[in-house]
Structure formats: C-alpha cells, structure tokens
Length: 481
Image 1 (cartoon, rainbow, N blue to C red):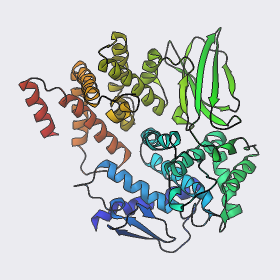
Image 2: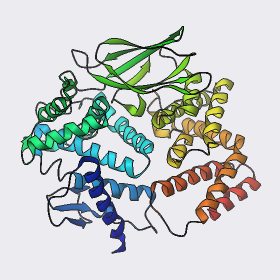
Image 3: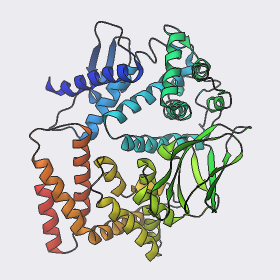
Image 4: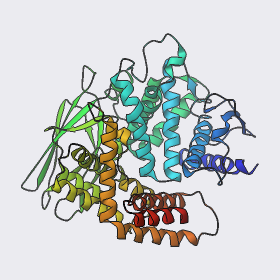
C-alpha cells in the first residue's frame, strides 16, 4: 500500500494546481484510479475512473529512481487534467484529437515544471520532440497536427498529434502571455463546457478573449513538416539588428513566435530581457536601440516554437556558444549552447582535428557552470555539465562510426574530468555533506536536483581510471556513494 503514497500525493498536487492555475475544480464526489499490470497503454482517462498501468502508479524509494517518481507525477497529472480537457469538453470528431491531447500534454508539462525544474522539464520535452516528432515530420509519415483523412483511427495517436500539438498550445501562451492564455482558456470553457468542439473553437476563444487576429497562426493546424528559421545579426552605433527568415511547407508565411534576449558582450549583463518577436513574414528585421556596446543574441528562448534554428552563414559561432553556455539567463538556451559546443569538440576529436580554441571555450563554459554556487536549480546545473549522448551525436553524422564516437566522447569526458578534478571533488563533497544532514528521503525539486548533480560529479570523477591507483580511488568513491 505504501507504494501508492506518491501517486496519491501527486493527485492531490495536480488537483490543487489546476484550481490555482486555471480555476478548474473537480466536479464529482469521488475520483478513482485503478492500476493493473496487464494494461497495454500508459493510462486512460475514463470519467471518474482512470485506468493505469502499475508502472505509472506504484513507486517505492527502495527501487524507484527520481525519473520514476517524476513519471508517476506527470502521468497522474495528465489523466486528471483530462477531466476538463477531454471529458467535460471533448472532441467533436477524431480529426480534433490534437485539441484534447495536445492541450492536456501542455497542461501536464506546465504542472511538472511548477513542481520540479522548469528548465529541465523543457529540455526533456524538447529532446522528445526532436527525437520522435521531428523525425516523423521528416519522413513519409509526415502529417499536420489536424490531419485531413485517415484509414484507421489507431494511426492518429502519433508524436505529431500529441507533442507537436502541445507545442502549438504552448505558442498561444507565448504569443498572448500568461494572463492572456488564461483569459482565452476561461472563455473556451464558458462557451463549450459539456460539448464536443473543434480546434477552430479553441482558436476563436483565444482570439476573442484577447481581441487579436490569429488567422495566420491557424496555419499550424494544417501544415506538416518542421519549419526552419534562419538568422543573421548586425551591430552598429548602439543599434542591434536581428534578421529572421522562415521556410516551411506552407504556401504563405506562418506566425512563429521567437522569444529573444540580448546579453552585453563585455559584461555578460542582460540588456534586453526576454521579448517575444512575432515572425509573420518570409523575411523580417527587428532592431534594438540604445545599447552601450555589442551584444550576444539569445534566440528561441525556452524553445518558443517547434522549428529548426540555423545561422544564415551556416557557420558555428563557438565564441557566442561559449558565452551563452556560461552566462545566458535562459536555462534552455544555456543548456543548448553548451550541448552544441561540446558536440563541436567531440566531432573534432573524432576527426583527430582538435582545436585548442574550441577546448578553451569548452573549459570556460564547463568551469563557470561547475563553480556556480549561486544557482538554486541544481537540476539545470547538472544538465549543463552532461555531454551530449552518443545517440544525439549520431543523429548529426552522415556515416555513423559508433566505436569512434564512443571513444571521442570518452576522451573529451576524461579531459574535462582531469582538468577540473579538484573542483569536481570539492563540489561532490559539499553536496555529500549537505545531503548527509537530511533526516528523511524527499522527492522534491531541490532534493532531486542535488542527487542529480552529485551523480554527475561522481560520473566524471569515476571516469579517471587509467592507473591502478586511479582505479582504486574511483572504485572506493563509487562504493561509498
């Protein structure tokens, strides 16, 4: 029975969160969850009687990882949120499936972000989007989030309908703002509670509640494929100019929200806080005046649109990547910049063409992140120190060399571990001392973040094992962990 405790706590948190965030209360006197080991899906949101696979309900600290706990919390929340977005307001027909699923996925992502690390939750969501949905969009099964036809309804349950659908919902919030999105959702429920609706009904509620024209944004529902946004920049006499262009399968330009910020190149200070730029034309320029000096752009913050972002020149600006990886105030872009920088060094190592300049940039970004003791989000700090996985790196290679890639990644990892060995051990011991004072096991954002970061330090330290002495040290550290 104790394995059900965390699921019950997650349900209570999701109910309170839905009331606080959207003013949505549960409408029945009892809420039932049934768990079965033989259920061949994750869960099903039957009204008042949710059916779950036991993997998403049962959790025990003796066997469950932090990821298991986060998964239980996310799925419990997802199925509960369906009570309003799926049950009380449902789809008029199967073509509208992305409305209930995309909206509910967005809601469970926001819930998980508020309960844990927002930046890390965003990173994990984007990883999944790029790994599954972008691949789907690039293949023969590419389809818009609201398809025009189908042979079998089972074929509708795709990454595009679910995850890209949630990104479309997220873009409403990015464009309209937090309060504007809530106003639109409130009007949506007032108009359609107890009915079957369409994606057009949702768009109309958002537009009417905020008195804006979203007709161009509607192209996201009918356009397949992943749009590409290219950028170029120019600084002159205190004015920074950003030029964006877009390319997609749509015959006319789409409405793409691009969250953007600027950091002073000399001081690292954020001189333009996050601003949403509405890219509505094929090519569009945005200017920022009154700057004291040149600045480094942070583009597509929080991954504000499901697009591919590329520099117009096609070249990788490693200096800017190192700057953003060490200083960007946006957690997602800080992680993204670091990943690109690490990848560049790993591929150079694979080709036996390692650049000393690239190594300097990597060391600067890694060292600043490692010794940042001011951050309160341990999870994003951990993610910013982890090298890209071999699977992620392989996606960028035309011809995959798994053995060479494994060796190159390991070489970079060991080089970082050796250079920062004393700092890694210092931070590891600091966290060990803090965690030893905890009297009970906790599954909250801070506790999960500490365990996550400490494990990253351990992984780097244990990679130093060339000599018998180093092997013994690594083994003792791992056993004592």
